[in-house]
Length: 178
Image (cartoon, rainbow, N blue to C red; front, side):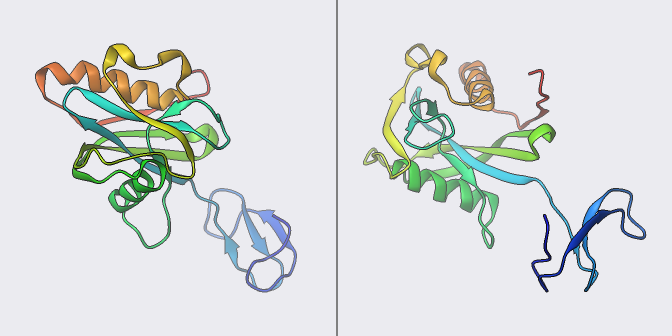
């Protein structure tokens, strides 16, 4: 960051009074510019013994499979963001959203939140960010063509939980070595 988004003056990276870490501070108006993690919210859409995946039409990882998810927007809850992303990527109508997975990725300043959601209508299809959308059983999942490690973890946990129909909320931290 080079300039203040409030007044346009130069900023300096320094530790503001009363803080314990470096922040960009405006040299003129003294506005402190906090940079915080981004929240990615999405759904694990299920129908009977299958899950829905989207083949990405955009970077990063275009052409690989993922769960419908994306950056949370201002003015929406995490659940609303997950439902919106599912509509945008797969034209999905979902119901019964239950918090299922939370992943902290401090090395890239992101937090992923996935809701376990039931597919309410089989009338779905690819949105502008997807090449294809498809329902998969565990045996049919293209495990070697998944876009992100958190998607792989979420799917593995889901299929491990499925036989008992118990889906505990999971919270984990992913490091660069994972």
